[in-house]
Structure formats: C-alpha cells, structure tokens
Amino acid sequence: MAILCKKFKRHLNSLAEVFDFIDRFVDQEEIDDSARRAISLAVDELFTNMVKYDPKNPNEITIELQVEDQNLLVTLIDRDVAPFDLTKKPDPYLGSSLDDRKPGGLGIFLTKKLVDDVQYHYRDRTSTITLKKKIRKKNV
Amino acid sequence: MFDIRTNENGEVVLSGRFDGAQADKAKGIFDRLTVTTSVDFKDLAYISSAGLGVLMATQKRLSEKGHKLKLKNASGHIREIFKIARFDLIFEIE
Image (cartoon, each protein chain N blue to C red):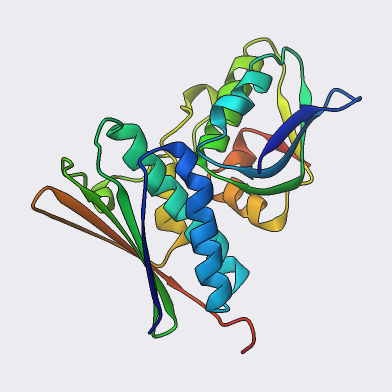
C-alpha cells in the first residue's frame, strides 16, 4: 500500500506545489487521468478554503495520499481550527437565472460531485477531511 | 502555469491551470471587459471554483449593460465542470 505525506505552507502560492505532489503520486501509481483531475480539483477547493477562512493560522496543512483497494484516499489535516463539517453543508440551488446566481459557493459542491465519498472528523481542534475516489490503473 | 491574454480579435485566451491562486490575475483582465467577449478555453487544462467565480461575476456585470461572455473550445472535462455548475443556464457555451 503506497502512502505519500507532505506539509504545505498555508498560502495560495502553495497550490502549485500541491499539484506537483499529487501528480508525482498519480504518475508513480499509474492512476488514470480522470481521477487525477477530480482529486486535483477537490484538493484545490479544500486547500483554498482552509487558507481563505483561516489565513493567520501559522500551522501548515498536511496532505496524505494513499491507494487502497482500487481507491485513491486523500486526507487533508488542518490543525488549531474551528470545526466546519463540509459534509453537512447544503448543496447550492443552481437552477436560477443569472440575476439570482451569486459568484462563489461552488467549491464544496464540486468536491462532493467529483469524488465518491467525503468524510469529516474533528477532534482536539483538528479538522481531518478524507476523500475517496475510485481509480483505474493506466496499464490495466 | 496560468496565463491570460487578449488576442487580436479581442477574445480572452486562457491557458494552463486556472486555480485558486490565479483568480486575482484573471480578474484584472475580466474587470476591464465592457462588451460581449469570447473566452477561448482551448489551452486551458483546468479550472476551479475560483475561476468559475470570476467568470460568473463578469457575466453578471456585463449582463447589466446587455452584454455577455461566450465560452468556447473548452475540453471535455472542463465542459463537465460547467455542466455540474449549471453554467449552461447562464452562459453561451460554443
């Protein structure tokens, strides 16, 4: 079972490094491009939210990647934060006209749509989000 | 690497990865648009909700003056993101 773990500075400029980290793991594990795109987007959305809503928190954000039973599991760990259970956030209504649509608010919705499962745990002021995405190996 | 430029036809051309770190750079270009404008996605590999937010804010602003953005040449997976976000209801997607 392959596992890769890394801490990233809490800044949007870290996103390029986050993408490189995901790409390196995906290439190493020969994971399909569809899963790569979905996980990259989901991690981008969650990481961006963690930076945006708690910019002064000095703690780095930990991302762990692992493959288990044909699933890519991604865990984001954010320390010394208030709880925010994204799994309980209601989906936005997107059927309205342009006048009634508001920019923003799509990140968590996209994340939930693009991965197969999202779990949230909060303990000792630490948020842990785990994403699961079914994968296909490129050469199988 | 993300890039945004305006071509000789007045179209906005996007390339690379339009992620959460690029919204301000893109906003600088989109905020200057005042008329109906095509946005070419041919070389864009990726867009996140931050990018979608910039597009939607621009569309709302332009629509107040009777103008709009037209989105063209998006790849299959970016079209899928547009579909999930229901951009088909609020944008002309070529």
